[in-house]
Image (cartoon, rainbow over all chains, first blue to last red; front, side, top):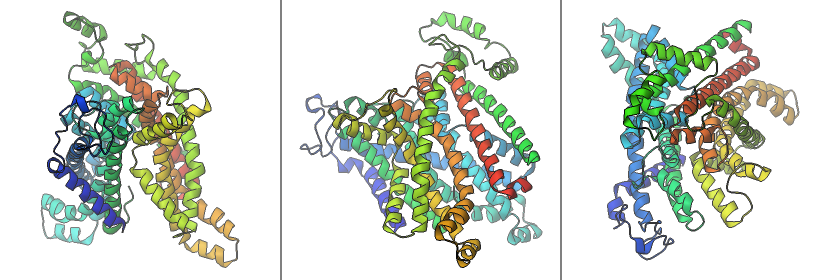
Length: 266
Length: 306
């Protein structure tokens, strides 16, 4: 049940993002000053328009593209980097493991959002940099989980058996250990995804992420604050879209965790 | 216990040392740190003079030693905007953040823990389903959006509460609810699952078999045994309250540490940024230490293993 709701919501968001240009005839960036701040239900603008007369539906739908793009990129980067480092640290132990765990301790001593925001403010604003700073702040979760899993998996009989047969270390690691760690990586990725999407929105909301006029949910919400007294829809719809995305992916992630790896509670 | 305490203290000192190093390194990510430490309106020809005056021409090791030496003495330099001691500004804002985070924490403990316990005890009841739904929604709702919606409802429409600022009790209501919402959702969920785990244990069966009152079985035998995961998560997440405060304080114009950090980043006032980030990280690390110590105190097995 939970999994189904999550799957349907996630697919709906992905579908809406993919089909954005066909779902609305409007360009999310085109201003039309004669029809600014139209309420939802206005002819031609189902969700209304913003202060510059841009169609809100088009902006929310294109915002979904951006949010999903950032989420997918960040999850891929963190999963590959964190996963590989965790794999090596767990397999080799000794100093790589110790170094990794100290780096993890340090990184976890900063609240995630503060770390990502500060890195972003230092390296500069923009789409590429927000993906990089979210990744820099987020990879450590994978590294820790994967390292822990590898430590236990490499004691299993099939790994010992493969080693006794003379299988090389690299092959042992990638053919015998990695496939058994994969479910945990998938589960962490799904649970991290919504965190990244919401964090990106929060950082853009604070003004350090994707900059206007690009339709990002966070910066749309930030702009909406100036119009809260006259146009509630500007604050409501981007937020609903964000919450629905987070809800769908969270439910899917919970379901994946229960199915693939009930032990794992991140 | 003493060995455990000492080893945890040493670890904490190491993490604090490395975190300060990380803050030093972070500012160098931009390539040329002098650009972060100059007033905005400076002439191009003065950049080199500034670089010299701020010591960015010295070898990196010297700069590092100077930063660490300053940090140990609580000296992060002078705010470029306010022309005042950066750490002093941070400490000045601390009480406001502690008030907000403390209220949110209290709210969570009063609402989320009893809710989690009740859902576990009355499993599959209407209350359980309602609370599960609320926690799932609570975890998916971004705090800053919840804040906007509350402002719209209670300040714009109903005019019951002020949109922001600090002063009276009514200023505290919305920010603390927003900060507590996400946190409560996680704590309630975890309390429920920890209670369910503990309820399946043999000692609960024994307690019931020997005829103990249900209130005693739950209060004494189950809740106490599920306290460890709850305290761990509550402690770790209490650190996230500091992160959440960054956003909540900005929405509600709450004059705390989080808002100071955001403003310093927007003004590119990097001495204050470094002071605030270092300070937050140290508090966060100390909080994790407290959680670990509570852990060792609650569960003797942890002390022996360490």
